[in-house]
Image (cartoon, rainbow, N blue to C red; front, side, top):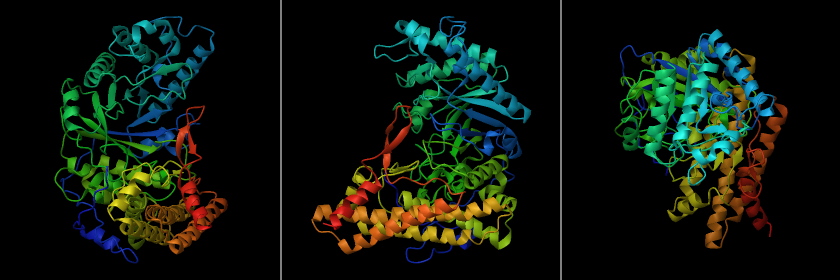
Length: 595
């Protein structure tokens, strides 16, 4: 999807005063956020959940948000536990076939150990006074079950199929075993499309949506009956699906599927606030606020495309009020526009997690800001995002001018991320050219976008925007040095993480200057060698400074790699692509300039 050019918008007075104009040319003349609509006394949304998602195949993420007491203190009423070992991998299937996990086997021991882990999670959540919900991939079944009964559960393509009667019977028995074994479980969060098996060594599975709409209707109907009606538990059915059926962002398809299901007080549909993954320049999800069923909105607080909290990245303003690139067109642009819609039933934050690998954090300040503001807003929408932000500033010890500088820093981080990673002025369709700890390059990830930029004569605009992003991040760093957060560790990390962002987007700035000028030279046969050489030196200097920061500051997150996002290793975990990425691309032109 091309990044839309932002339309000039009227600043709310407070934002105009806070943002002003960024230093230097190319100031933030069109940066803004939609005014927060007046909604009287506001609402307390019925549901507020949080999740820490571990990287698949890696050790569990260490986070304060794993502790349900922290969530209760923040006003949450539910914890979504996601270790990619869901409850149905912790039952024996004895009610179906005792040969699947025979007593004394290693597989049975694994199942029983997983069950004890789930018991402990439920006890901790309930002791804190909040509900325990488990992230659940469907379809995931024991490998031994499929070996024994494959002729009755597999389709002609070898996929486990819900359209086989025995598969549906197995899932009914499975769910009844789950709630018999875990009576304290408050509900399930169902994902289709992606099936992660890295953490379940005795199971196999696949996407259940093998026949589009009919598969969704079959699965939702079965789950509604077994989870909501029979067990009396809550069911969150995620619309995120990678099966090509468009449930996640097509209003007509969403209505066709969900209108066929009778509403139930314990059934909610869980919808990302974006029309695809958690990217900027992707539209607000048009399936929000429509149909017959209540919805809970998913918000990622540490985005894997935007450094995961290794540097400032304030997204709560954009989620609630609409990101600046949405312009001022018709229709909802943020959750504030849906506050009066009774279908908006809650917010589900992902305080940590999403994606793969690093950067790995030593401090959760920026995750905390995003989730706390989202939580405060969900518990009382009447104060708006700005009121929630002001409360957070007071929470960390900032008042008056210092609080205003903190807000400016936060809003600038959003502007700098848009211009540094994505674009407000040129088409950047490869939104994954950076993700997790990887930096793509002109040799693969950015090849198509660079070609389009050159075809449209937009090279100068693209490079000026990356220069502008770097200036924004220099101002972020300057502001960070003026903010006296009361916690000394957070105060130190505020400054370290701002510098992290400055170096990241300086590397990107000079990397783009070398790569895009190099691709232009490949086309014309003539290279701007002086400019490319100067940016090569600056690129190398930024990397040196960035590595020096990591070596000197214990709170610094782990650094990016100048390599592309590669393939899965033997453990099913994605690794770097050693042959492609920003480093190989820049080095290609480095070698060309020294010939």
